Image 1 (tube, rainbow, N blue to C red):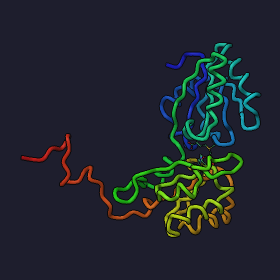
Image 2 (spheres, rainbow, N blue to C red):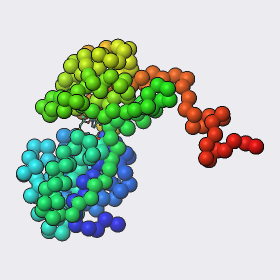
Image 3 (cartoon, rainbow, N blue to C red):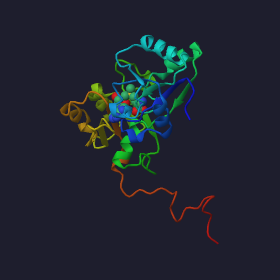
Image 4 (cartoon, rainbow, N blue to C red):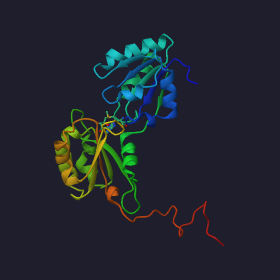
Length: 255
Ligand SMILES: C[S@@+](CC[C@H](N)C(=O)[O-])C[C@H]1O[C@@H](n2cnc3c(N)ncnc32)[C@H](O)[C@@H]1O
């Protein structure tokens, strides 16, 4: 049961309402106020709100404008949902919201969501960690209006040749491609994923050398995730986990 007046910071997942967690669905169904990051959360996610729920879009507001509304509604005894796309721990600017709520003494709870990279892997039906090929996933973005610390520049992360999930980078994709090509082979598979889970979802599987051109041809500037990974082209690799020659605690050697 959701009955406490507080702010629930909820991850909405990539856009498909069926990918909301059960907890997120419960909280949304109980919400009296929903403050939604509307530039990234499609309207379908709000389909099962209470008819009397107050919906406050925040894309055009500053934190200074919407935070007082949040605090005021909770102090009125209301259940407030702050709805972010994907998982709120990634590129959601919840850090400053949490600090402000703590300062105001307003109770809150964070409810995770499925991030865009997980939705992409599921839609592509691919594992992103393949034994002997790639065992690390990097979630990152390129420097744009928000700077990435120098030690995390794309060119240095590319040296790992890990599965690289590139957020927030469509506007700078040419630079991203050049930096990635410093280390990844030009034929490395890339999934260019537009609006995963939205009615307009499209995915293009291209070699790295065509990542920027595909983006430009399709005029992608927003809500685009790039998965750059040798795993997308993997064939014939096998993990030890279920291998008949591999024993472990739960599958000891047969006498
Ligand atoms: C502000 S960040 C939010 C990320 C979000 N918290 C998450 O975990 O997916 C927005 C960026 O996430 C990626 N993204 C979020 N939702 C997406 C979707 N449905 N399809 C493709 N990319 C998405 C894009 O790279 C977009 O530019």
